[in-house]
Image (cartoon, rainbow, N blue to C red; front, side, top):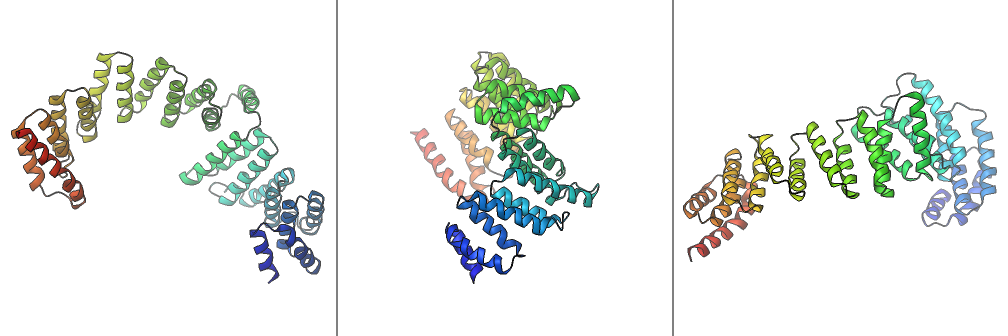
Length: 381
């Protein structure tokens, strides 16, 4: 009943009222570790640092000293001190827990979620101390543990970025990293990329971000996200020539990315290079002539150019390649009507009205067919 009351008081942020209850319970049962960690947190929340440190020392003497290699107790003490912003103690307890677990696992550390979480929490402790270098090292160690699990690896990478966001002096850390790389001749592409993202997202320091992204690309040239971020930074600083050059470089490694080709068309058009823009536009189809997406994008582009007959040709290709659905015909019909090619429009409408289309197109057809019929009547007038 007292524990339930204590939990209720904690939830209601009434930690001061819980202290007397916890102190009485610990006097009766001094070996109850859970009550001790709750009382330490209550002291923290009520801003009683001396009482917190005294209880921590007593708890360490009672639980850690006789069992220095008890991983569970070490991890619990680490979590408690981190929660209470005793970052130096937390980093130390996690270091001891990491050693105990690493020794037990021997060479089987990859994929161990518990060890990864120790490194992640220790990184937060070092970030709290303002030690960006150690925070990054520990966050990076967590990444290494997850080579095959994309979700967990991404979670660890996100933590690394968070450590960089919290850095009190990111420039100083980068300078330190540069010296280490110069000495070891081994760079860290994941860290470089996340530094670039921190400069890009938090500081809007485009030149600094570009430098880090280029260093990362030297080691991971196939990282398409890196290419996109580099282009975004070049755009942000107004370097149109650089952004165009980087777009072309990105297409060299990812030629089937239709979005990049569309982007290239826009860039070349904006820079008044119509011949090159046209070449880029036709590449939308050339990179995948048997895939409808490129024909669809080129058709949209032709419509924006007011080249409707060319757009009609592309919409026919979409309809041919996706003959089991009405998508191409639904775009072909209004283009035919625009060009007053009424017989061809009527033929397309018959196909739309009589085709055995999949059921999930019913709502779209019910919405669009009446509009097309109405447009046909207006064309007659």
